[in-house]
Image (cartoon, rainbow, N blue to C red; front, side, top):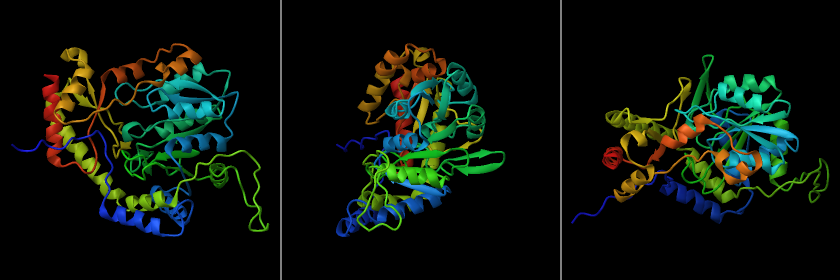
Length: 388
């Protein structure tokens, strides 16, 4: 009897021998916490995405919190976030006492659009909107040019929530912009959780083209401490309250090793995505890939399909369980945040039909560089069987 094929999770890190060697070398070096690998990782990352500054921190949520702090967002301010995202996108505003106005999303891409932002701005009318947080869901790039124009009109800035989009490119007015280059935003936020395009275990990065914002983020990640110019080497001051959001050298050593492979990881994700597109065509129109806008050249972190469960007469839970029985993992990205009990208690019920339509149909299938071409066939065949 042949062994069952290995389980295919929806996402998985790719750790190779040279990654292990890089971590082992860092363990034998002088620094385990903040050391030279942190600065080296920051420098390599900012060069890769085309930003002037990069600040490495403990995790992706910490990047968003630091962005709010560095921008001075606080009580009496409003941040606009799409409802389809992970909780941290909205929570970062609440961490600093700001209120959240949830924007709807396009039901077929899951992205905030200029139209949904404009509608959210109407609901925020009369209040000070300080920041707009577009999410590059799955790795597809939001309309940064259109969103920035609207944000500028109310005196707000963009903070790109980009953990899904490392390696993605958006083209606006004929110019290609790697996500994170800072052309449209005050900050872009990245995460290096294991299922992301680049893994450090836990970790995150802020990129910006503003030297003052970068300096504030660096200070705030280390308890708010600064070294006064010309002072004795042991002297430090704390002009404002900060946090311990530092990332260890050993994780940045892994990040440096992973970053050197980013182009290969991105190419493999694009190849697998193209294979999925071809195979899933046979299941249309009941099943189709989430829509990519014309300006977006994504390096997809999530391979999300939209399934008309009602028309097929099957529940999503039944499909998830049938896939699991065939050794195929799946996930749902995401339950709209405006439905979470905390936010319903604070803001009441909201009618965001695009977010609800997205949630009703979305299912994320396996996508990671370690997959073989034949794994795509296996996943699509399992999905076809699960859908009957």
